[in-house]
Image (cartoon, rainbow over all chains, first blue to last red):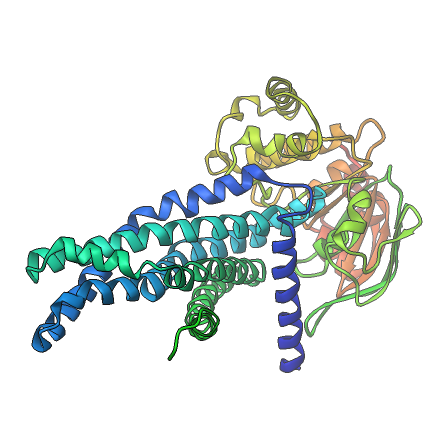
Length: 254
Length: 256
């Protein structure tokens, strides 16, 4: 019985994921709903993304400085910080922050709408709840997470610069020169594809768990927790898989 | 005509409806009575296709809606307007936008026309002064009235569905809501109201359906309900009509 239920849930999840994405190119379009979601997800998350990525960049630079100074290779801080942040840490850390703020918000908002019969009201009014509620959130995540990731990466590199110059007393010009050198098409692509995948995963997982809410306040707590946990796990797993595929496709030797 | 034909429904292992068969005309004023968890709200959700029965068929004007998806049910649902328990207003929208929700999606009215229409509807249910308030700023009675206004906004439905519209309201507000429900049905438009408050039910309806243990225990007029000697019903109506012939004569079918 449990296996049957799990398979049924998986089927529903895949159906919602597909319909949520297909809604982007199928009428009717709910532009206003998407703009509201983009404002909440993008502008609303900017400050926390900046703070978290700044300190991640600074901590990374500090750790590298401590180790590389023993080897007399502190000039490589810029290069390693650049590669780590652009290809890996920037997209992943920003996605985790996005999950905690936006994903949890999506799940709890939709869960509350289910429990308050607002989703039923939307269905009775003749709207498709997937198009009306899920697609705008998918659009918002697909646009705003990459945008936030670009800002997050830039801020992380700035944090690395600050530690490199004012704590490790290295040349700032050489730091930026190293960063410019690693910003190759391959490195940028290796990091730039991830936020789109993460954004889509966060949106569909959190919308699905939110819309599956049953059983009052306890059910809402469970679905919100499930949304965040599942999103984090899927981000980490998909990050590994994407890294493996992208390194192979982009011609990196491992 | 709405027809439930030997309908059964369960929530997991809990059987809520068993072989329920009933026909309701679109112009009828019907109240479904019963205790908590007897499947009253479930019937409304089945009629709208929000749930699909485990067994049996549901026909709306001859069309079998059993098991159909949201897309196929859209035209059927447009025949109804439902007021859910607690109102189900959209928390993120103010009263004006809640009432204008369908107008913005389904009509090409300008902002000025929409505002005028919203004010007109809100005035008709007596809450025009709440137009710019958010749902959390409304009292229980206002909440229900705005929800009724939203149900009236787009078109003229053939039938209203009310899910516990007076639950949680003080007697004065409950009486006002009953009066509003009765007024809205004066032009021959029917409704199905679900409630467990017999006193409110007797103010508005012509026909009473009583559910007990998932089965249809009674289907008749108010006078027949109050005269019923079925033990389950006698207990239920005792609050408004203690045993004795006079009370039943006074209360039966006394509309507001």
